[in-house]
Amino acid sequence: MKKALALMLSLVMCLSLAACGSGNSGSAGNDNSNTQPEETAAPAAEEAEASASAEEAPADTAAAGSATEISLWHYFDASADAQAIVEWVDEYNSLQDDIHITATYVSRAELMNQYTIGALSGELPDIGMVDSPDMASYISLGVFEDITEELNAWGELDKFYPGPLSSCMDSEGKLYGLPQNTNCLALACNMDLLAAAGYDHMPTSLDEFQEMVAATTDEANSVYGFAMCCVSTEEGTFQLLPWLRSNYNGESVNVDNLTAESAVHGLGVLGDFIANGYMSKECVNWTQADAFNQFAAGKAAMAEVGTWHLAQTETIGDLFSYDFCLLPTGSEGTSTSTIGGENFGVCSGATDVGACVDFLTWLCSKDKEGEWAVTAGKIPTRSDSVANYDYEQDGFGVFTDEMNYAQARGPHPEWPTISEAVYTAAQSVFVDGTDPADALAKAMETITPIVTETPLP
Image (cartoon, rainbow, N blue to C red):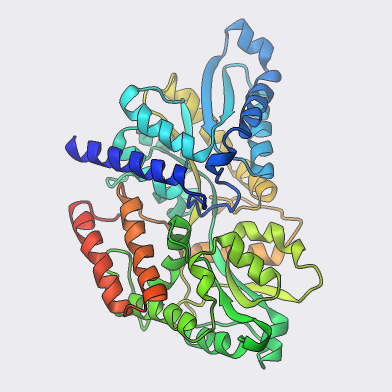
């Protein structure tokens, strides 16, 4: 109980600090998925609109009192996601008369705050949305209900990618929700700049990638070989992890062993990029949106980008030819990436757990997963879902392939603390010139006691 209370207080403090900051709150799934504190008043109208829209179609059923009322809170505020969740809820309500879902928009920071408060007060929605790496923390606080039995009875869990599904589990493998959308990271390449440097292909190994980054850097024209987000938030950890968890010389590690040679080497490569002028020193302040914008403007030959950026490639226009490939984080033929995305869980004390599960299994069904992926520029969380993208089809093919190498962040109830140790180590290398081995050893002083007490899955 003391540990849970300490974690709860820690989360409250983190949320308070996040609310005071002006930067991104760190969700890695969508550049636009994080409402900034100063914007919380504006979405109030969206909240009312979303709720009203979700209620309109089945109003007569709800009024008759024959339907089980289920509340759903979400923080989708990007236009495609926000509109889609309203339309999906309307559709579900129109398909049957037994369950009525009311979807309400709550800003991400406020929603996380409400979960923390609700863990004590019991005032929670029936269904709640959460960023995938955060779910384990809220499971440990008792925010979400164990629905393992109900989901096993559904019989479709084997269709989900292991990475996204694992983010809905506790350390014992119990399930508290389903992954509704997912994304990962891959490499965007300016094929014109690569060709000018003498390359007719994209990098396939870390060694070749290092060579290409150096060759495509053009200091005279302020063009860097590589761009990525290294900001000191969860966004930074999201993009750093592939290089720390790389498969290099036959060794692959997780965050519980960051002093391993492959992790030290990966961080060292990134540090050398900055020290040699191949990557801008400003990367320590860049969000993922900033890094992509550098690439789209032709100021970076290659960039680490997310699935959602495929919907933004129109900004490149005819400026240059571009393509995508797996992140070349390690030895030839290997890749690593990080999983992002949102989960929906059934909250503790839900009005009707069965009704909540019925909606979740519909929302995350084979067909609806494919439809959502196209609408929102994401990847289905199920391997049997088909997303008929009518834009950047080849690019989505690369990201879908990358999902086979993508790993979840955690899941772990103290992931925020682990994440901070990771991005702090990177910042010390990039800003202060600390030796990568020393920086990661320092990070492990924080991480080791945590994972010793509660091991990673």
